[in-house]
Image 1 (tube, rainbow, N blue to C red):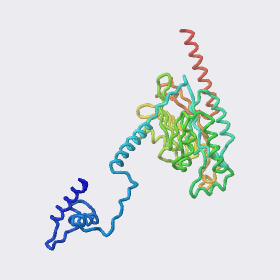
Image 2 (image 1 turned 135 degrees about the vertical axis):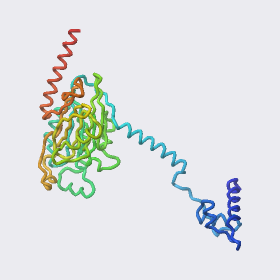
Image 3 (image 1 turned 90 degrees about the horizontal axis):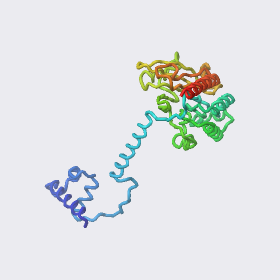
Image 4 (image 1 turned 45 degrees about the horizontal axis):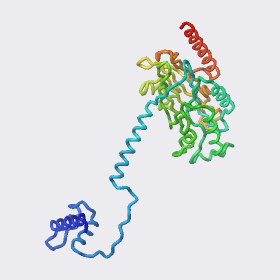
Length: 354
């Protein structure tokens, strides 16, 4: 008999002596509480101590569950790994290898497979920015309709299949080198194993659900903080910038805050209490025809289907010129090209003087 069995038997007999009634029987419930075991286990141990054979003996089946020691070790490792990953996303460092002024092109919700998507305008904008060496690209989410659950019935209202929709998403994401890809609510409906994560797995940028916050470290030594979310909490019928402004006042104070989701566009600037000038932008996306909006009698506000935000790292963060949203993508490229010419001319003059 193993030492553990001998010790257990001795423990059981000692407890039986303590809880034996005057009639000679053992108080099984009291013994079970005393030893901290289940009532049925107590009965089995009493029978073993008294030498009473069991009516049957079944083999002990192995448990599919880990031991408590293994479970605790796994929880320790998983908790540390998850918290470390979460902390790393508070502010992601990004080294920008562009000298001087540059652009940040934020693609509004495209809903690529929707019949109401202004696909021609989207292609035009992508063709314009992907050729520009000083423009970074980010996506604000809802790349496709990705109907799920009861909404899957809406596939009957579009000619593009679910399979074809993912083909279009892959095409769009591969057209440009993307600084960030934010997954919107439509994208996240897929759940675990999202195809966008698979498409972007080897890309140099960041793909995150709901939002991402970045510190763009420019060659001149300054940092421009960008907070891009599919949407920020807070809503006002009077101001489409309410959510981003609420974030600036009550959350992180960044130079650029950009959102989408609501299919209305706009931009504004605000000054934080510590003097930082923040550029707030909401992109309206490319869904020009929307049966849901017609049902709710929502008025169209197609400003900034995508937004071109111009960043001049030479300007102090208290300057309106540090980051500003161009009125249109086309005008923004003209402004950026003019600023680039001025920057390069100044550098050339400085080189000649040197």
